[in-house]
Length: 249
Ligand code: NAD
Image (tube, rainbow, N blue to C red; front, side, top):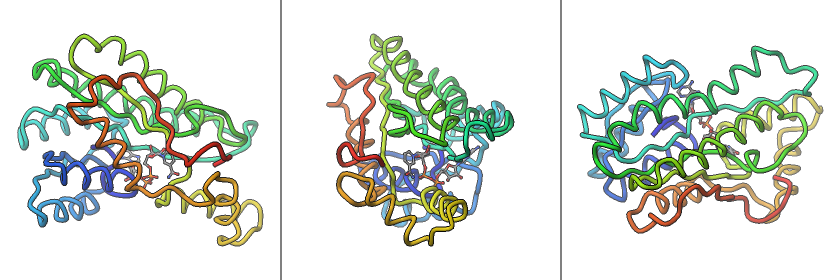
């Protein structure tokens, strides 16, 4: 589970643990991962902390080795670590572009490449990529993020076909605005750039959604759990929107 220390990643880690999975917690901040580990172990589950920057190949390889030796061969991978930034296209620097592509797209390539030998050896596997509604359609001022999430959906679809005969499924989950620290940062950014108050920025996002609310991390987590169940084997190569219907958010 990458990006397991906060937001959606934390919710997915806890939900998978409740279903009986042993969870390898990957992220940059050991302290935040440690808190999730304590939450899991205090309710009878098992988890290990494997700090890594998912954009660094050696870090990723080491984290997957640590998880395999601590918990056994992994058979589920959730590529969730990611970041969002917004800027008008003309003001998007090549550095910002590369950083967003690295953390949202190349990271999934790296972690999947490191975990796949275990899945092939086990003869089964589930890969869930945390894309976004921005992986399915475009929006203004988020070209890099949108390109990275469309790329992640593309990776999902290709890998699903390539691994279909190996008892491994690959799917993407595509949430709209979820109530997480990332959304808090986005709202601060919108407020800072437009002069709106934080409350007004949040209200505008809520208003643009079909159900007039933000999605909760637990709703996203239950979709991930579903995709990881043995009986979800027939669901493969899908990009599942979780946005409460066709709003703008
Ligand atoms: P978040 O900021 O709470 O979580 C992102 C996590 O990824 C953090 O724990 C962060 O430390 C980790 N991370 C970032 N860069 C990393 C790196 N280089 N190496 C290791 N870990 C790294 O935000 P969130 O909303 O929970 O986001 C989780 C995922 O969901 C992201 O991929 C995001 O794009 C996606 N998503 C979020 C929303 C939303 O509205 N919040 C909507 C759609 C998709």
